[in-house]
Length: 166
Image (cartoon, helix red, strand yellow):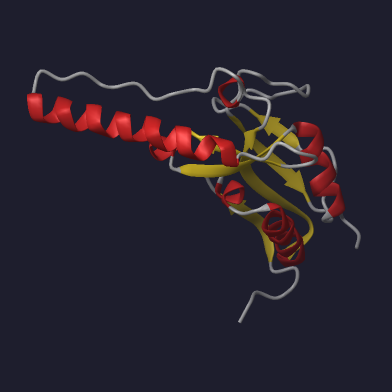
């Protein structure tokens, strides 16, 4: 059985978890969070930044950590090579059209496709799902963020408030 409407003051969705679902799933998550939050409640989460330079032409790649131990080094080189093969195979599946973007991320040796958004798109999604359209955005190290582009931010933390009225 699910939680009752207005059960919580705070909902936290940790470490870009909301980016592991598709567009419809993301909207469903936001609607459900709004449903279980009390009026004026807080939703805290992090989300990948669509404008991050590492998603662009010069995709961010993991590097090999060198070792003098031949078995460790061999394993690391093999793992890195497998990631490069996976990147070549999965990159054509990226979707960059319209409101949402599903992008290949370097995590797990290019083994994960993630939903990525912009601050403007995020504001729109939150507004459509019962939240104040002006969330607080923070960098990984806790600095308040402003603006739209944020090229150096791989992801950002979000603090959104549910509207005080229904």
